[in-house]
Length: 108
Image (tube, rainbow, N blue to C red; front, side, top):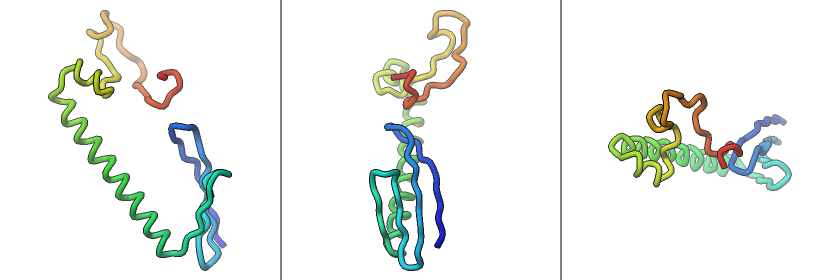
C-alpha cells in the first residue's frame, strides 16, 4: 500500500489531498469533505482531464496576455486584468513593491 499527501491552495483556502493504493484501486481524499475510490482506468481519466484543464488554463492565460498587450489601461482595468500599475498611475515616483494576488484577503 502506498500513500501520498499534498496541500492544494484554492479560492476557499487550503485542502489536504491524500491518496492510498491497495493494489486494486486508489482512494483519493479531499480533506474530510470528499472521497473518490477509482480503479486504474478511471485514475488515468482523472489525470487526463486535469492535464487538459491545466493546458486550457495556460492557453487562455496566454491569449489574455496577448490581448492585454494591445488593450488600453481602462479596458484592462474593466476586465479585471490590470493589477500592477506603474509609477505614473500612482501619481508619484513611488513604485509598487509587491505584485497583486487575487486570492490574497488583503486584495478582497
